[in-house]
Image 1: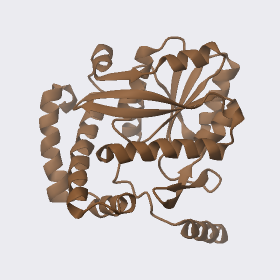
Image 2 (image 1 turned 45 degrees about the horizontal axis):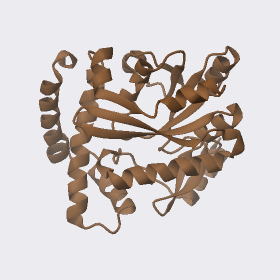
Image 3 (image 1 turned 90 degrees about the vertical axis):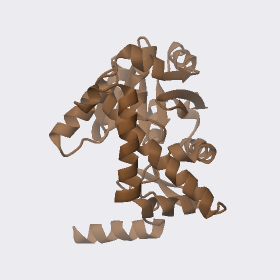
Image 4 (image 1 turned 120 degrees about the vertical axis):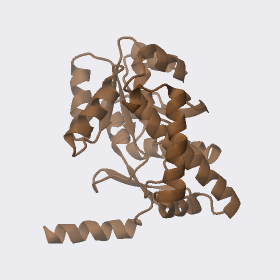
Amino acid sequence: MITLLPMRVLYVISDIFFIITYFIAGYRKKIVRKNMAVVFPQKTKAELKRIEIKFYRHFCDQIIETLALVHLNKNQMKKRVTFKNLDKITQYKNEGRDTVMCLAHYGNWEWITSMPNYLQNIVVTSAYRPLQNKLADNLMKKIREKYGTVVSPMKIYFKTLLEMRNNNRPFIGTLIADQSAPTRDGRIWIDFFGRETNFFVGPGKMSVKLKTAVIFLRVNRLRRGYYEGEIIELTSDASKNNEEEIMAMYVEQLERLITEQPQYWLWSHNRWKRTREQSEHVIKRTKHAN
């Protein structure tokens, strides 16, 4: 299997994959360019082109790196993924608080499932949306749970965290929140790079209800195949904030991260597919149809 090959060989495959994806298939180039134009209206075409190429190179690396999780063992991952300020999590635990950790589709979010390698007596959990293909879903679930992360479907994720709380199992609840919310009740509109943008409000809601600490995990790419997860505190006690304030803090950190190193964000997602008015129109039309 391709996943059993050494990383240096896998990166050669990634280089070939980049040529196919970028120059031949032109995968989602229109969406990538549209998104970059929204975020960086002041940049020249040449500057945007450089970011675009770097993004596609990293995009291919990220896919290959995710497949590599099949064979990378605990010790190998500890060399490739480190964490900064991890003592904050232990501090929250000692103070009797659990943690909600907010991520983005940035760097390599799949490799962050190796966090249990560094923690004791704290359950790292992650919400996910099950794939329709059962084989693919089982494979991704197996990969994400390999190092001890407990994954739970998004629909029952709050229930999963609540059960852990009731069973006195300290947890980190991990949520990737930079994409659009699928339902009206689960969304919030926040200014994001000068444009009103729909965000998934789950981290805000869950952290306020469970009175957890909230952190932003900044995933820094150190070099090819090596990452550092830097913990940034948003609030030590979410009950002192409301969900809108927490999500605004998350978006502020996300903007800063993308501005500093834009090539590692997932630009191929159609982030600004609809305006607020268009979204409301779709919801009303769907209600009438039902």
